[in-house]
Image (cartoon, rainbow, N blue to C red; front, side, top):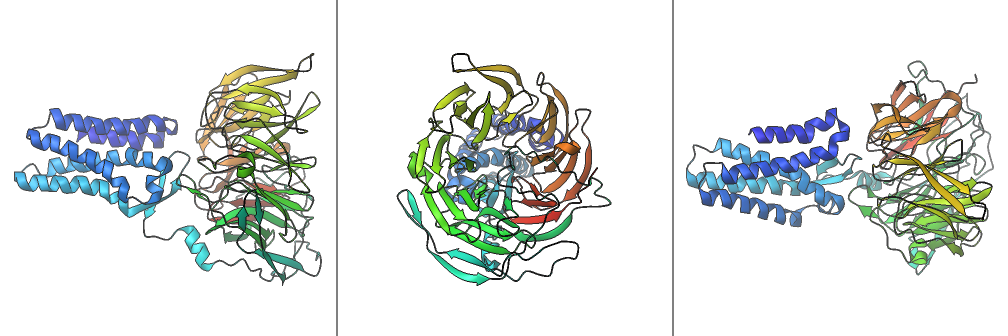
Length: 602
């Protein structure tokens, strides 16, 4: 019994106090199970056949149970997690049985032993998982319970509704008499092109929000794809002036964030979500959250860790919305009504299989090209026609997005993928330089400091490195590593750079490191595996936690200081927050919401 107590404390108690020790705690859970088996086999007083028969039965039950498990439990990383989680449960059940049946007859004791082992293993067939958190904890539910997506499909409608009266303090002139809603039928995928049929019907007028800053949010991580919002200051005393909810509505699963345009359609937001067997590009009214139009493709991606749905964020550019779905569909849609301009299949174009976690790149528009990363391989399409213009080097695998950068006056596109950091020319995709990194899945975006150096993550919760890239006299490039730091170890959470420091996640805890040497300055604040944006004019981080809470944290190297916290949405939240003007948008795989923040001018 003592071994099981230590096993459970090490496996489930220690991570609460020391989140960074999670990997070692998982190992402790397995070793605890091994200790129970060793005790039973060599030190218990049970008869030999009973001792070895129990061990054989435990092994057989563990091996047979996956056959009856829900697909969400037995596939992907969850298959491994089943073994890891079930070992402490089986150990506890077995030790409790041994202690409780010491005075029973041999026959009854052995019968209850078989029952205890089978129940400890077979009970997992009664549950399913809604996925895993960033710390590999499973979100379990009864197998027969309905999912958030099923509830949404049972009640939701894409039909637009009349826009309610405008609040007095918001200036919203009418844009034009009517818009059009496009409701495509299921898309037919053939080769590298996707043909979608659409029906059109009138909808009420779309209103226009005149934001205080007049800012647009064109897509992934903002105008410069770096999570930095210059020229904006907000009220930080949320006890006196908290965020005001504008609307809240359920949304289909997916890890897409938002693109927002005030000029196109007069205050519209765009995101991607899954609706049953259809992958959906959806447009909503920014002020009300009501649907304006939706485009559907007959495609569905699902894996047990993160669940169903697209991963990439739409890109809004000159009246068009460019999207990249989890199965490889690239769409160019009219931003006003969702009409298909062109569609491609990047998986077919690059001859790539859909990766384990799906295609996760957000489209990048550069000049007259739209560039997506198909599992580590860049492909550039003509903005007007969708015709492939060039293909980048083979990066093997990866889940990051193309990142624009200019070094020594030379425009380039960076990609974090299997080999490491790769730079290509936006003109033709030829490789300019490469910096190798250890073999991990790349998810986190690179960041550029004031000196033009790059801060890059090795991937999957490992170190960050600062590298200097300069153009050589002979026309080539020199790439030099300045330091390698364990002070910041993001898994899939992007970081920001501000005033000589980087702010991001070290595991599930916020941290600050000095760019001079990579040394950690402070670490504090448990926000899970969340995301953030930086308001540099105010030295302020706006953090969206993995649990859906909003927090304001000082972007200062002095110390960790949380200024405010506010509950925004519920459920696992990996999506990047968006601040467009004074409207803050948040979403996860179940719901999305909009809040108005008070802007200040100081």
